Length: 163
Image 1 (cartoon, rainbow, N blue to C red):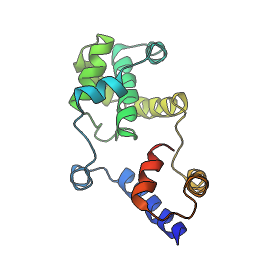
Image 2 (image 1 turned 180 degrees about the vertical axis):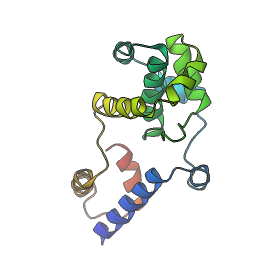
Image 3 (image 1 turned 45 degrees about the vertical axis):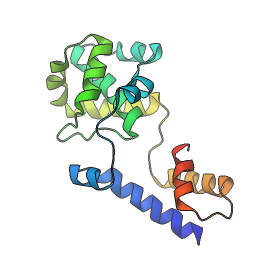
Image 4 (image 1 turned 45 degrees about the horizontal axis):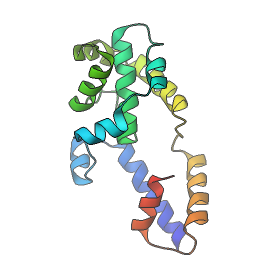
């Protein structure tokens, strides 16, 4: 019975990540406004992050790269590309840490190919896993190992956050 639950949850997660319109964010309470504490705890760039950001040549690329690193650390997904999803608090925090004008993001958001390349680089840099069939198998294994015989979806979702 619990495998059915896993597949329903997996389908739900896939559906949410594919369709991130504002309406869905409101319905499922996906956070788009972050507190100062959340930004500081999750969005502060490490010295290694800054070293990686500085490998970008132009300021708008540095800001865009840093913005996406912070965004994915906070939201657990990448910002959508068309139109480029901007959360003002996150952009401001990235801008402050790098001492780069927020308006540089205007040049960055026009460069979808660069955005996509940066997302792939960030995925590798942060050791993020694509949500595909392989990830589903890992998730099933994780579920079986950590929650044997349990059928509590709420607890499962909490443990899933640690996956």
